[in-house]
Image 1 (tube, one colour):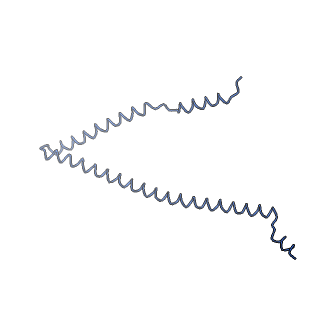
Image 2 (cartoon, rainbow, N blue to C red):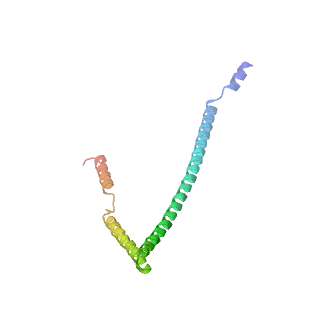
Image 3 (cartoon, one colour):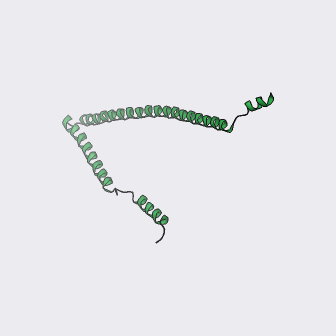
Length: 133
């Protein structure tokens, strides 16, 4: 009677492999679920941070507008006519804008348009791997 119990307790190699496969797939599924949960939490935090940056940018833009209006009114208080004060502030902004456009044009003009170092590295690798003729 003990030999039948021993045989019942012993499992075949196929059963052991099936159990191991099931356990491994279960572990992989749980790891993927954990990774999804972590990424979801990180994505929510990143979205909230991006929203805060966008709000800060909008508020900074509005503050800049108010500072420019204040500068114009400061010129009015210094004795200029309102139209002249606002014209001076607008002119300064246009000059700054033109300078930024020219600087941006210079930066874009200096682009090479292709990754020369990566191309050279790939060509060197191909030359090293290719058998000599």
